[in-house]
Length: 178
Image 1 (cartoon, rainbow, N blue to C red):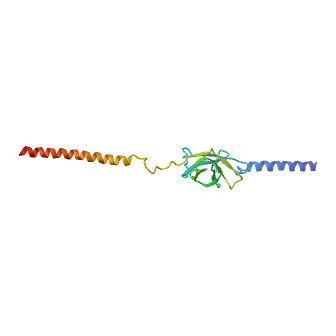
Image 2: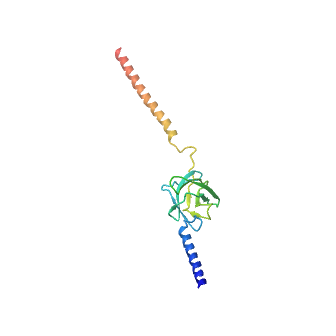
Image 3: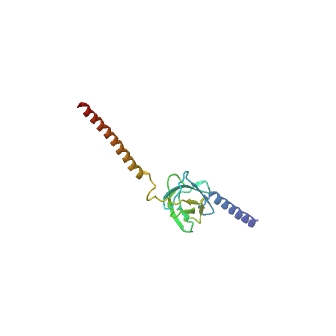
């Protein structure tokens, strides 16, 4: 009987310890079997090739708890497979991050938010379609060079007409006096 009581006590103690451990356990780190969601800020700008863009997002552990204490990196993969990494910085409310990115080529880029200091946690985002920058016209392109000479000619003609009218008035007065 004493052995069965000892065995029962040992099993009960183990169950209590496991139950207490589970009750006291806090949310595991994101990488410990967890997952994260990324919510882009409303009005996220559309990047262009070679242009710098600032993108804000909220990072939530398991879709609910803000993640503020982590190393957060945005990784972008170019259409030809080149990987670029951009560190994000916490800014504003808990879980809000901002990343400054410059993507040098036009095309379809894949990108994801990663937390390298955790176990592998990557949250892929919808691909970015990077537009090419429109070339600045070197000649032509603007009506201003044509308008300036035309406006000058119009002013000159108006001045000539006014001068001619003044001369006629002065001549007719001079003739009328004699």
